[in-house]
Length: 173
Image (cartoon, rainbow, N blue to C red; front, side):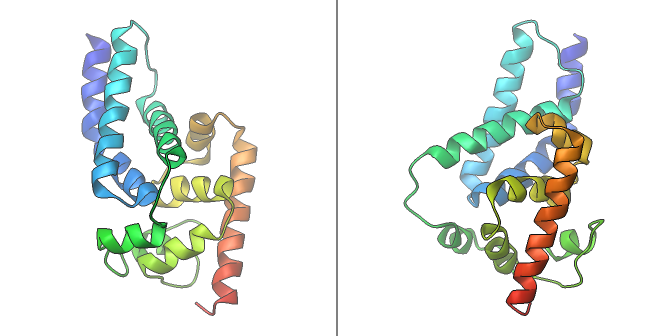
């Protein structure tokens, strides 16, 4: 009964953030909703089997991340830019997230520019930067989700931000 109540609380606390993360990664609102739904379904199935979850936030993000990777592996016929255009993400949608980050960049970008810059950095940097600055996860939480050391995650975040800044400077953004 305790795990059921914790699950319901985790749903209330994290569903919106998980959706934003999934939407940002897959650029399709319908797929993002499906992935988040699958995340909670798999988590519930895990609990029904008698297993326990100590901290739902990293567990949910890890499950979500695996489902997003599965989605990426499916054959895609549209580019991310086309999906972003179809989703009608407004310009400036991510400005406050970039400006509020700990290693804040000194520029404001619209959503399309952010997506273009993120597409230019390697996936292992992109994932941690998104989790850190768009989802607000701490390096320790990201490390738990990705099953890496906190030091490795911190280095990837730093290098990812540096690459973003370099690409933005190269494009005069």
